[in-house]
Length: 80
Image (cartoon, rainbow, N blue to C red; front, top):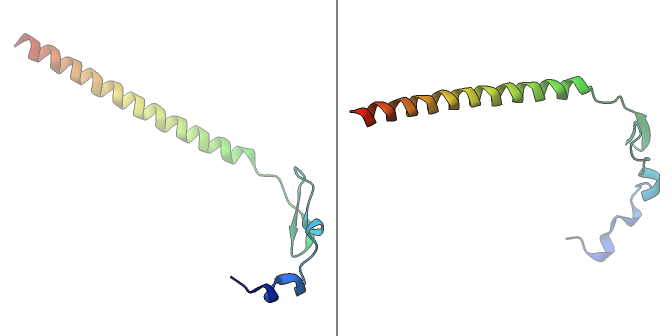
């Protein structure tokens, strides 16, 4: 922890309000100035969602197949 006499008060940081950008705008502060940034490509996130959905479907199908094997095995053992 810095002693009280070694604060950042003498540094060349901008005032707090000078670093703020209006929320939900396409600007960010980089090196002390506003920079226009492009929005994220929504299709990228959509593709991730589709992959996760396909993985969930695959897991469900494998679980159903295993459950069917267990039921079949229980029926065979029950008859023996």
